[in-house]
Image (cartoon, rainbow, N blue to C red; front, side, top):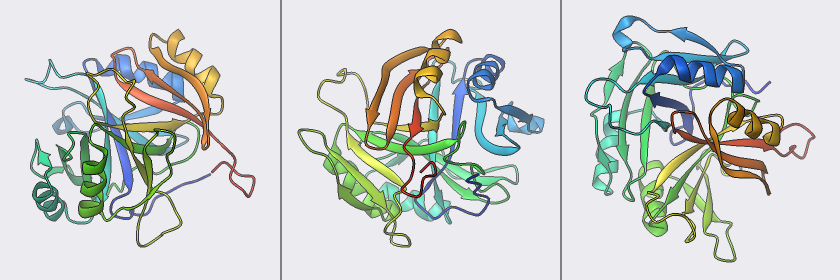
Length: 268
């Protein structure tokens, strides 16, 4: 089982959470879809709960809170950092913006949420007692996260400058996409940066997309529909696995992935 309890390398997508109108409804949906259990945090966390799979923390769920009722329900991907203040300053000097200054989340972490130079919303996570997802690349857990951009060259430059991404172009035939690695592990992909396809709706903004591993992508997509969500892109085969873009009942979008086996025969 791919358990990851140590701190993540800076720049690695390490955490994801979903903010919705109705947390109890989201809990019921994700419990049925991913077999998640939940643990409520103290009242000062404002209704935020942690989701667990097989005893390991995998994601967070929270309410929108006062004054944010008109905000769309959405998932946020967080990138690891060892210094939230320095990362905020560097991101701002590279064309990014932040909606919150780094703030303390109980004793768990310091975090901030902003948008990159192309407008994709993301978070940064300076771990304290909570390093991020303890289980990855396993059914019901985060297995990939990528930035999809309306300004691909600008996004490449931003993530190189701010998070030290080493980016290798792997797209072709009009498909623009780069795999990101870090200097500390040049052979291990940590994320991706891609261009939003020209055929996508014009109103679709730059965004980050979390992928959650499933044992059967087709069955999981069907289950999303049965549970009140919707399938935005039916399952299709990709070089890395079978994937489907879906939305929960409250409109939050995320992707499912049945990962291809690794060369050693395990799920990669």
